[in-house]
Length: 451
Image (cartoon, rainbow, N blue to C red; front, side, top):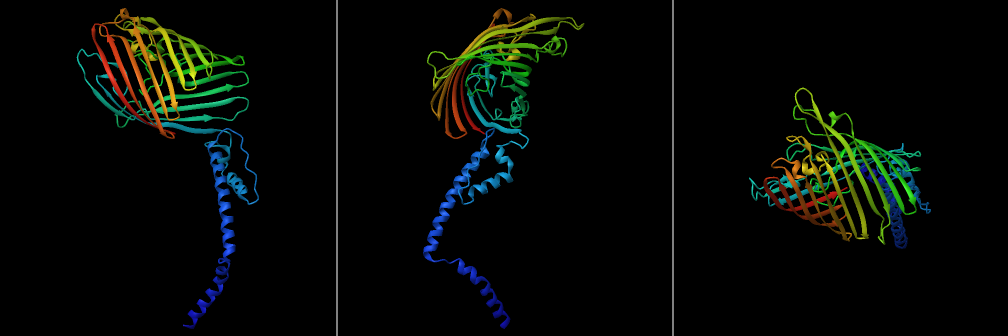
């Protein structure tokens, strides 16, 4: 019993000074609380600065000066411990940065008639055999993921990009990834030269309308796609407010399968397809931003075997076109393209038709599109426009698609940061040679969470 009393006595002796220090006078406690509140406020301000440092990239960083209470010194110690915070999100100590980006997208659509392919609309199937065959589609295939890569700057800027979506093959609920972009870019900013090596957008037909429908009026007046290429670009300032851009590229030649073997007629030609564009960016009237007008075209050949002995015939793929981007007001921009060409199926033109393998001749087509983007306020955007592609009927066999038109309008609402939802209404009409036309009214609802 006496031992227990002794232990309790010793414990009281040990903790008594601590209890005495933890119980200051009432006035001292109030002043200490006020000091603590001020310190917490400074810490919160410093935390916001740290968050800014973590989200910035590629800019010089200067830490706030120490205000005497050691708060900024603590922040500096934090950055010394975690160098990535001082370098920027994703940036390593050797000067490279890798920044992920993309979005999750769900598309829900209803079509009054059968369209190709259902998840998106490119043309309407003829109602010769399936009149008013309505369809409903729900897909997340357009969900996209990419990486932007940037290397150290030593008089030359080296960047790269890799981007995927899920419009590859596979079942609807387990689709395979589909490569969109995979390229490197070297820029010499002092003289305006740049080099692209890899897969990215074509040089020709560089502008797209703003649609919720996955194909941005492809096969219906807009065309141009992505393919492996080697591209050289020169940007020159003609004066203070006018810029000239010249781009040329050697691109992968992609053709259809020859009728007598499985050879790619594009690769079999032995040469790439050459593309070029010349563009001027300059002020027009009193527009708030400069307008851009471009002239472009491409040229190549495809080699199709005509018999089992290896005899072949060459067919030309070529085009000429013009693009325009015109900011009318701060809230309204008008864009459009017009073109004429032949054998454009590899570029999502010709309403999906390139060479008539029955008549063995190129299929010629012409068309274009016009679209407007109207920003009502930071949360609401309205897009509308129309497109048309007209194929030379004499180049088609019976059942060929000779004309495809679409008219669309959408409203996109962004109620939350990085989240938006939109609804789109479009009308489609596809005309066929010696077959009944196809008409469709399409309603589409989309949800997009970007990062």
